[in-house]
Image 1 (tube, rainbow, N blue to C red):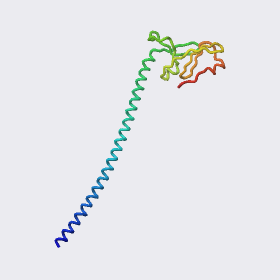
Image 2 (spheres, rainbow, N blue to C red):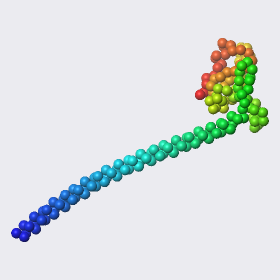
Image 3 (tube, rainbow, N blue to C red):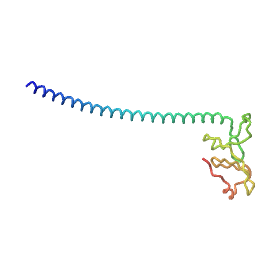
Image 4 (cartoon, one colour):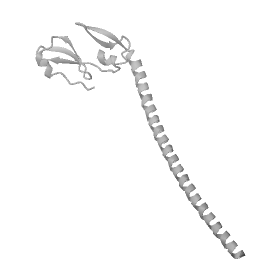
Length: 157
């Protein structure tokens, strides 16, 4: 009878060990699932951090551009070119070795430095200041002729 008791206890111990093993398997599965979920969250956070670092870099670059433009635009003053036309010209004493030139008023007000180019157009031998960025044209001499439309440049915005 003692042998049967020991055999019964042995069977119970074996069942208990199997149940414990199943519990450990379940715990390992849960642990692995938790580790995978945690790794996914870490990767997502790292990705978001990389995006934020890139955004901060772009914003710093844009701030530097705006600060440079703010300093440069103080070198110019709005000038009356006659015939109701205006452009920004270098202020006296602000040349820094640059030749006299005009900036497009529309581009200047949008925060861009676009030097206007002088062109002569035929027929009429008109002298025109042209902004190649936005396409603005200022006729300094002469008048616009219908044939001038073929000479107008496309803006590069």
